[in-house]
Length: 151
Length: 150
Image (cartoon, rainbow over the protein chains, first blue to last red):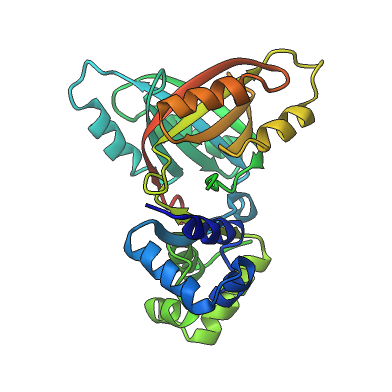
């Protein structure tokens, strides 16, 4: 379980993951050695998993991002497994999520432009197995995207 | 910006784990440390790397539930999108907000301690937002990030 000191360190690190241990120590009002011990323990416990670079697909020429919300044909016993295995092979897919609710699966798909999207949608998405229904939401803009937790 | 094979491999490596040193990354890709550093800097300066995020085990820090909300605004035209966006972004439990086109106007990612806590966030924070109309909730069961076209 986390204590207040762990939370303070994670909160600070979350706001700027590029901070070094000495910078973090100064902000937290602790010694660098103590911050390092805490970070080591959080990593060992699997709380702190990694720092990852966020890719801006738009900067790489992928101007279109679409959220595809799918419902699957649940009368087929292995519909989920077979659908997911096939969806993992689609290179334009950057995220796969499964849900409990009206939507079964969501795919996040990127494309260079609308003709490229149309091609991927027809050739690679509509051919995926066991789809009962698809709804598309096109991303217009990101308002908040840091995905930080309210620690 | 156009990427060559090495750039793609480098981008993929740091998108999975950015804690590695340029020496470690260079060794994996068969590059010298200075060459790795130059390529990484170019990826950052071109905006291909938008920033860094800390990956925490949400469950281990006490957030057992993640819910995606589709939000339709009820009174478009009367309420400004800016007001809605400012208010929704200020909710600590809301991790991401996307403006979308389609069945909903916004897609939100919300974390909560458990379902009872989620109900509190939904009723007290989300349903009271200016202009909020129809809301659809889907509880996240599993999630994977793919490498995409890299």
